[in-house]
Amino acid sequence: KVTGVEIKDVDLNDSMVRAIAKQAEAERLRRAKVINAEGEQQAAEKLVEAGRILASEPQAMQLRYFAALHDVAGERSSTIVFPLPIDLLAHLGRGTSAAE
Image 1 (cartoon, rainbow, N blue to C red):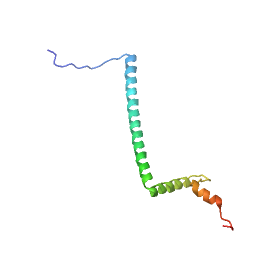
Image 2 (cartoon, rainbow, N blue to C red):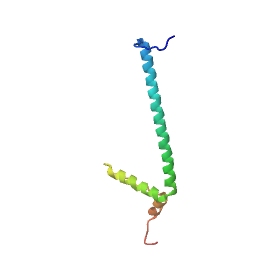
Image 3 (cartoon, helix red, strand yellow):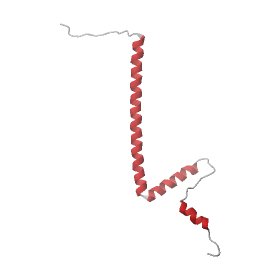
């Protein structure tokens, strides 16, 4: 009766070594893609949550707007564009005259 077997050394041919290495690389790539996809999913969920907060709290949206302006002002840009609501531009376009 055999009670145990021990393998001391195994010689694999080059094609088998390449096949094993290729399979291991494919498994590493698969795991990396899964991790990346999970990260993308978490980021999307956080963006949805942030959108809900910003939509329900106008002050939060203004704070985000000011934070973005602060970030833009810190860059080495000579031009900053301030987006304005269209209705505000309509009032500015009319102006005031002496007749009014």
